[in-house]
Image (cartoon, rainbow, N blue to C red; front, side, top):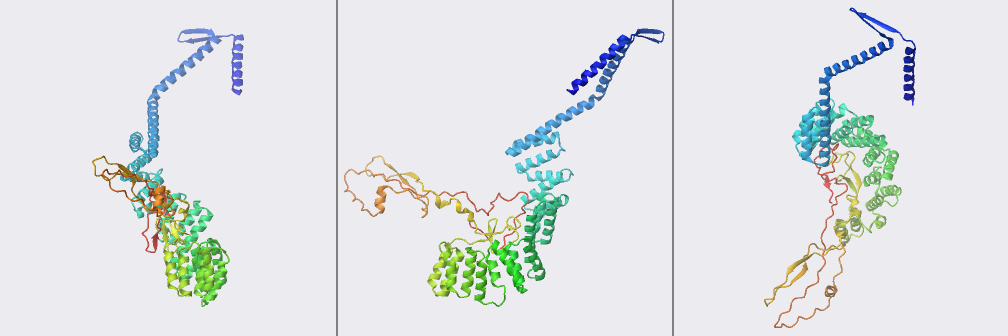
Length: 550
């Protein structure tokens, strides 16, 4: 609306000017080299306007002619850019869809059109990775790492390639360089932390945690937990040599994470040695209420040096009363009562657990039978039951169970990976082999050839595949088969006759077809679950660790 008003105002002013000039006619005379031109003022004005317009048109024409090379070059450059953009876009789409041939074709086209573009380098590297050409991918990432605009991307690619070929030293160097150039880079900060933790460089790992916290890579809760784990690991490393420093680190770890069982256990032992029983008891109480653990119960029982077995039993009963009904409390009381030869209390503590005894429960019952009644037979019976009993909780991480807590997973190098739980406990809700129904598998086989040359008769029989489980559901047999299984007398065989009879077709039987579900342990990441960004190469397996059976 404003533009319309302005346009009308301008047109009105021009009309007023034209009317004013028309009301005031005049004459204009021009004399130049003997020529005299006389005309009116209006004609002279229109002539000047025409001359100005013609001059402007000529200047625009000359200017376009002079600029035509640059214009043509710009058009060609824009065209190449559009073609390069299209090639890069199609190449990335082909990589996402897994079309290796198309990805290589578009990568070559983009390299021909725009060889120095960052996206062209990225497309070429990813196409080489898709084709399995690791050497070409590494060369491309190395070229990207040498440029300022793609350095971090090139370092990330080199880090991934080094991890794929198992070169932990090169991967750590690339991660360290990337973290130094960009402290807020997530993959680099986490990778450096795990590399230093795997190498046992607890001081360096603590520095990385501080840097990650300042860069905003982790929140305050994660910072406190990771620092507590690293301080506990440092205290464990110094426990044999410098116990004073180990005590300081353990106490600081307890302040950061009161529910961390290894830190509370170490702090309780150190304070017990210093005769600071009150503080040691508070630390163990707090950790026990959050995570009941047999190590905490054992440390709590032996806080005071020289106590009798009955005193230790009373102390353990006090600790177990803070988590009523928990399995670890009952087992700790039973163990302490067995040491104090309070067999009735030990049996009373184990009684609620006998419905579904675990291995530790069965072994404690075997020890109780041997100590109370000197009944070797009952003890052996319980030891046999322990072999087939359910598993007890253990320190588990990434499919590996350890006898003691470790700060780093030996499989993936993850910090604070070990959790106190029953290995593969999460499989309880899934269907196992025994849960599948039986299905008949008829397999035709030829019947025996009779004496006369009559054509044979085929009878469907069942080929056994696997022995049925006791827990599996089996289809009911036919009435004839049921009668046979119940001990019914079989009919007498007929007298041989001149014409042999044809054999009666037996009823098909049902057998179990073994079906193995694709289920793996939840704490076993499998071959493809390792993080592509942060997990360092697997560390060598310690003899104290063992694989969790699936």
